[in-house]
Length: 376
Image (cartoon, rainbow, N blue to C red; front, side):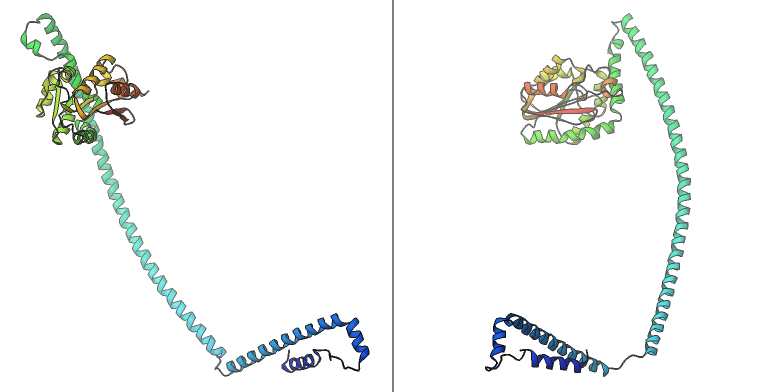
């Protein structure tokens, strides 16, 4: 709306905003009509006029401010079209230079990557050649293992022939001293079974190390007596105890076991292990251990062993029994071991320990084997 028209509208509203009210005293008819007929409508009209007047006044104020702003901007130097075109051209050139630099760096990076890929291909080819060499070596080792397996089979066959010959010698000349001193077939079989069931001695030692913590805990409890092992086999557990500077005892009636263990520099008693444990003075041992032993005993003999261990242990001592678990694995320890009578259920083994007076009994381990660790 032009400025002069806004001024005219404001003047007219200012003149008629009260509708020429109030009326004169002499205008009785107008007063009567205003009082009885149009009073409310006139009031609304007056309020509308006042609102419109205020709106137009605000509009006029805004118009004056905008005109003042336009006048200020008119005094500022304006940028011409040619100058804007020149600036746009400069921006385009700068963008082209920037893109050219980026493309150059990109191509350089791609070149380095292609070079690195070439090096990797060469290394991969060299690795493949080494892999072929390694495969050939593996095949050669497999051939050597097959040859050694065949040789071991021949050795076992010769041992079987030697056992048969020794059996004949014992039957024909029982009074001959040299034949009587030669170990029987079961004595040879015990060490051979240890190799078959347990594998390399290094593996057995690494597995038995985890029981050292229980022995040291018994020492902390005050049970500082030696560890009595009833099934030394190849002596792996005794080697672990020696390496940990822990006192130990062991017994075996097998002369070959004793000879093998003594060859490792270990001490072992020439006696039946269970009888030696029964003869041990009460409260003199810190721990009793049995590996591949419990599953080979009659139930009554196993109960006797647990009772003897409870008697020989000092307060705070521990009984450690490791035995195969009862499973359906055709290649499991129990099915391979010819001396194993029956898998021992953990509940039965716990029952024997608690009946013997062990106060704290736990079953640990999973898989093919588990362990009973009982505290006196």
